[in-house]
Image 1 (cartoon, one colour):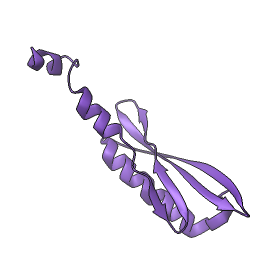
Image 2 (image 1 turned 180 degrees about the horizontal axis):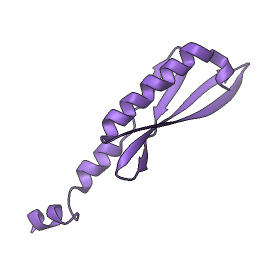
Image 3 (image 1 turned 90 degrees about the vertical axis):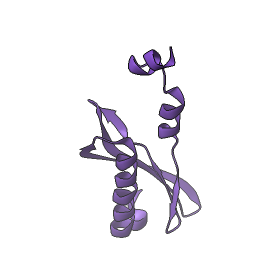
Length: 94
């Protein structure tokens, strides 16, 4: 029975939930949370960058046009793009 559930999309909920677990990354005083966006069977690069500027909590959502097939690869690429943006802009992100 479990084979049929997996075959027709009824199983594998644990694996899907594990894939969706988001791991935040600390980088140069900023918190990067990858948030790949499902888009037509692929995942669009997206991340939230949180930081404190002048004692005030700030947040920026990064969304790129790039899409990848694998959610974990998209999450990794999202972190990379966020790090690049932090390196280039610093606090000006907010």
